[in-house]
Picture 1 (cartoon, helix red, strand yellow):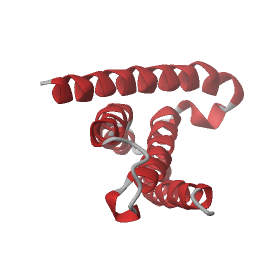
Picture 2 (tube, helix red, strand yellow):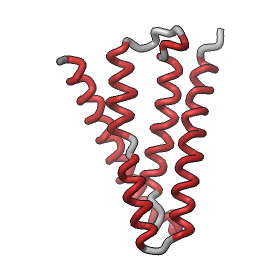
Picture 3 (cartoon, one colour):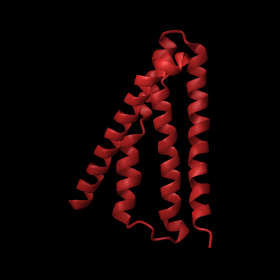
Length: 136
């Protein structure tokens, strides 16, 4: 039962972090980034930073690395709970569909290609950073 509570707590914290970052970006993007008024920049930034974090933490604590950096329950807290609540593939899908509905085809392509490429790159960079920290 305690493992489920830990996962739920991680998910709740991740959700609040996503809500906070998305709200912060939404508040400032209209003032400083007029092009981002149409583009779901908050969701993209949340997903990229979440991908970096999961790549970083999975590498530091992964069994394949032979590291015990995090106990299994705390690894699950971060990777499943926090990152699961923080990143948001469903919002990405809905926002992309809304852009298509509004015939914003350039933004549709930018969101699909950019999100996929940048999120994969972020996981890779998170892994590279974690490996760099583990160098003797």
